[in-house]
Image (cartoon, rainbow, N blue to C red):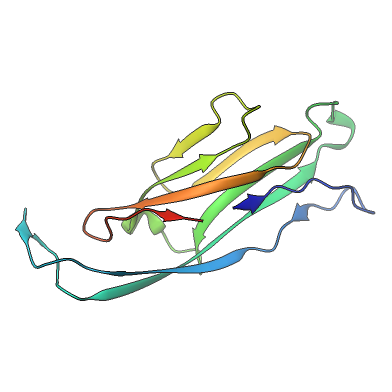
Length: 139
């Protein structure tokens, strides 16, 4: 889960950035199949390093009581490579006070930007293309 901490800092003009988390998805491929010329090779393991985190910025004079920060939560390749080759979609579960708290991003970049006033945890679930992995990954 990602903590969207929006605590006050000594220099309000500097962005508040959480340290990104590096995670590697390892999976074993299934049995050999021939569907539409795509093959799954038995017992092949791939590893895709990913980084996820968030950044928040104080809105300064534009801030209101309920809209004091602009923030972005993201899932990226460890060296900023395109994850859409392996990731089908990312689901971000926001706090229940947001309109439509379950947000689905189906193409890269897998990120979500909003504004708000507090801090909360965001659950992220990655869904992979079927030829990569059939199980989702909860971050």
